[in-house]
Amino acid sequence: MTTDRPTRVTVEVAGSGERLAIVPDKLIVAGYTGRDQAAVEAHIAELEAIGVPRPPSVPTFYDLDVALLTTDPVVEVGGAATSGEVEPVLIRAGGRYFLGVGSDHTDRELERTGVAESKAACPKPIGGTVVELAAGPSSLDWDALTADCAVDGEPYQRGSVSALRHPAELLERMTAVIGAVPRDLVLFCGTLPLLGGTFAHGSHWRVRLELPGGEDLTHAYEIKRRSV
Image (cartoon, rainbow, N blue to C red; front, side, top):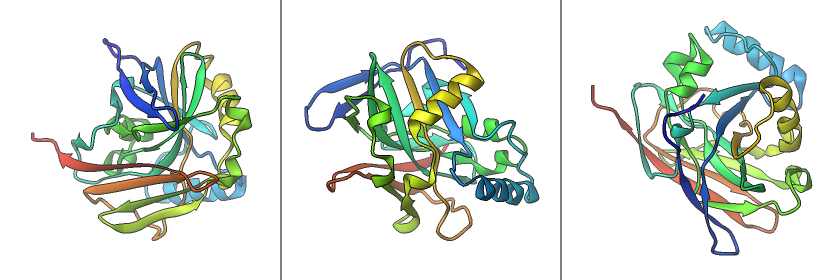
């Protein structure tokens, strides 16, 4: 999906102080990215039971408006039942690759009738700091990363991202499904199970990606309901 005007998001590259301007041609949110196919199928069946449509492919790649991408600390949503999810984010900008953290904020009411529409209804926050993957995404020690999310100060998600497909594999699968993306790209790489098993619709969200060596990528944002 495209927007009429370029979207520019500026982040800082950790360890260098470089201010990196991201002007993505594509914003892709990958879904159902778990490595355990039996667990993924069980999750799909659970969602079907509450009315969420079965995905067209596994993994699924949702092509969203790049204007949804934001580093703002306050974002607006239209629905009353929205929630975030921590995700590692792969960024390609100017031929270079970077890793960040983001939240796939989603309208859970819309999700019952259309997953793509539910994702397109909400901004996609990302943190203001990224780390460069100088040797490309294949070099990333994916299994050494952990992620967590809190809502209104309460733990919501936590675990190793080793449960998710490696970003290098997701890039290959994405290309097979939607075609090559020749220029800049932002790819949300999937999320972890909820600690409590049910969605929370809080106001204050914090996501974190822990890197080897103790470095963290974090982002916090607040949800405001859009006036109607």
